[in-house]
Every structure is written in C-alpha cells, then in structure tokens.
Image 1 (cartoon, helix red, strand yellow):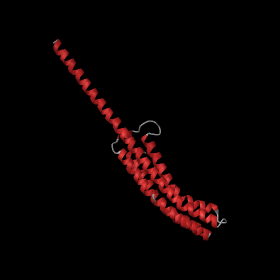
Image 2 (cartoon, rainbow, N blue to C red):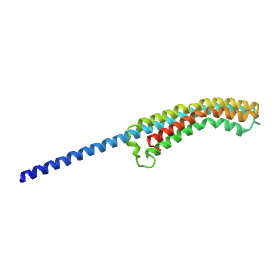
Image 3 (cartoon, one colour):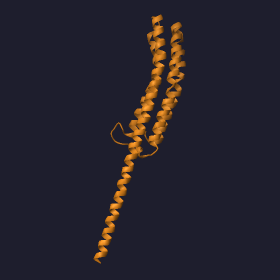
Length: 193
C-alpha cells in the first residue's frame, strides 16, 4: 500500500513539473511574440514618420524656394499669404507623427505597460502596413509643394488668386487624409485604439 502511495505521489509531482514547464514555455512564447510585435510596430512608426517627413520636406523645398523668389522680386506681396501656401506640405508629416503616436499609445509603449493587443500575432506585421499606408499617401506632399509653388508665383503676379491657390494646393492633401483615416481604421480593427 505504501509503494502505491509513493508511486501516486511521484506521478503527481511529475505531472506538476511537466505542466509547470509547459506553462513557462507558453509564457515565454507570449513574451517573444509581444517583443516581436513591439519591434515591428516601431518599424511601422519609423516608416510612417520617416517617409512622411521626407515627402513634406521635399514639398516645402518647392514651395519655399518659390516664396523666397516672389518675396525678393515683390516685397510688397503679403508675407502671410506666401507663408500659408509655403507650409501646406508640412501637414503630411503631422499625419505620420500622429499615426506613430497613436500606434505607440495603443501598444502601451508610451505608458510602460504592454497592451493586450500586442499578444495578437497579426499586430506587428499589420503595423508595418499601417506605416506603409501613411508613407505612400504622404508622398502627396511633394505634389502639394509643386502646386503651392505655382500658386505662390501666381500670387506674386495677382494677389486676388490667393484663395484659389490654397484650394488647388489643399486638394492634393485629400489623399493623405484618406491614408490617415485608413490607418486609424486599421488600428481600431487591431485593437490598438
């Protein structure tokens, strides 16, 4: 009878050790998945901010050089009108920054506590796609800079076309706004927002 009790006790201890080992392995897999998702999410943020920043800077170069030329040739042309047209391409970089902040907050990386969404295996790869959506649609800043430069030149000749120039330059930004909305919807669908 004593041997039977010892045998049962050994089986119970073996089962406990086995199941605790499996639990530890599962916990380690969850930590590895969360760390992988964090890395991919940060990469998605870098893509969104980096490409939108480059695109905005390129657009600002076009519009800025036109503004400087008009200001040099015609100092009496309203400086605020030129400035408004010149800075329009910068908004796409704001969309990239906003997307990165929302993703980092949703993942819990800004608060120091990991979000439950980070245990979802599709969050990391999806964050890269969110970054790509913002990156591609923010390239509209380059075209916006070209249109803003033309509008600045037109305002240099006739200040009455300022409003039309703003409208023409802003229409290209619609693509970036669509990209931002798509990114937000993707974050909501992933549970990051």
